[in-house]
Structure formats: C-alpha cells, structure tokens
Length: 102
Image (cartoon, rainbow, N blue to C red):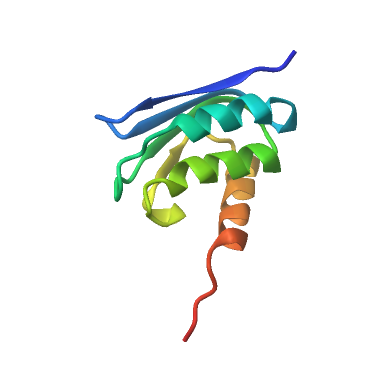
C-alpha cells in the first residue's frame, strides 16, 4: 500500500515531502495539510526529493499547503522534484492563479 507524509519546520521554512503524493494517499495527506500552520508571508523551501510519485491530486495538496503563506507559487522554492513532476506542479499552479486584470 502506498504511503506519504510531510514534515514542516517553521523555523527553517522547510516543508519536507515523502512518498506517493497521489490520489490513493490524498485523504491522509489532506488531513496533514489541513493541520499545517504556515506563517503569513513566509516563503517556503519544499524539499521533495523523497516524493516517489506525484499526480494532480498530490500537486493540488502541495499547492494548498503553500497557499497558507499568502504568497504566490513562484515565491517558494521547490527542490528535488524530477522535471516532469515539477512541470505538472507548475502547470497546475498557473491554472489556479487568479486572472490578471489589466
């Protein structure tokens, strides 16, 4: 059975992700993400080298965790995701961003 978890070090501003961030683990991850208390306006370092799999459900949960800071996605540093997973996360972040009104 797939598993995943996260660990947040508020002092260092580091969010460590582990395991399969996929639909089968989403319910447990959603509860963990819901318990996060990210300080407002704190840019995070997301250490994701231990993420073994990522799908859209997992990407949405990562973005939900980052949203607590009140900063845009690009303010955070994502480390350790392979190129395809990083592209997926970035694509979903772009699609969820509020439209720019000129």
